[in-house]
Image (cartoon, rainbow, N blue to C red; front, side):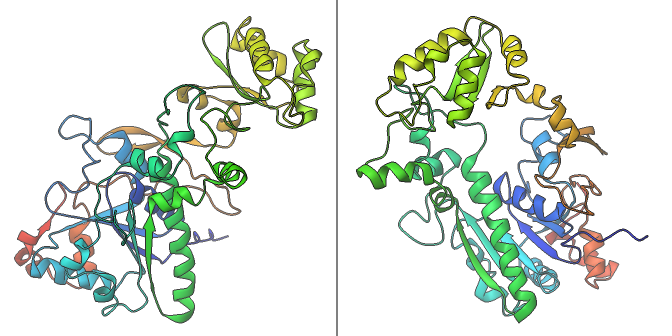
Length: 398
């Protein structure tokens, strides 16, 4: 029986992004079967490729988020380079770019300019603050986007400074998942109508639009809640992080009464059962203090064994190396090794979803800059002589 094609088989995506947000977006599209072509300049290209590694090596980050992609290296600032790109554009379904507003227009490759050559093109721009507004030209990184979106101020413990998460919320939620979702919606429409869309993604907007829990307090009181002072940020003893005897941690998420009751009984402290968020007059600080003392008296491993057969939402806080050895993670095959011609065995995350008759395959290792330039040029109909003539505007297999 023939293998069923992946959902996005036959879709061609031109990826003009670098670093983390856009490449993670196109990683998901590539894993779903789209042909993703990284369109890189002829200089340094995607500088995530060599970040933190010796010359000639590829960074683990670049390898992890650029599998199943091809690299086409061209100088878009030259007339001939732009002409080559337009020929490539005519064969594409999606274009995703991450430059500051105005850059693509100056290159002669804005949405309005591109749709003259491909009316059905889905054209997605990913920036920190969007294509308009007073901040549109501002530089920024994840920490700035979540800072403006009212998220950073909510992360951390009561009385402490905002904590910087090592999961880039703005980059991944705002710059990868939201554009992927929107691109697929526009692509579905384009296949029906033969008309494309211009998509304007602001990573700040995307984070703000998902900041629902903090919104609740603003609606109720007109002001944002204090850090560590909300039901899901550490105010109540039933939802928080606790240190154990061996300087490890437990995550307690016993929000519902039935879970909280089981927890209190498991640690021999039924007297704490009334100290729950459904009882607004309860002394939450006392409850947290008592729970902290109990958990600090034994090791993390001890508490894991205590709660192993208890259904009350208590779990160990794992480090990533431990996560990769976790039975659930291994069963779901969320981590795997793939061969790379430069770096050897490379550690990879699988797709964040499962689908019938579908499995992740690392068919193409993260590419060298310009690795597929000649291949794609020939596919576009350029002869070897023409490719040699265009050589100064292209880059081959570095």
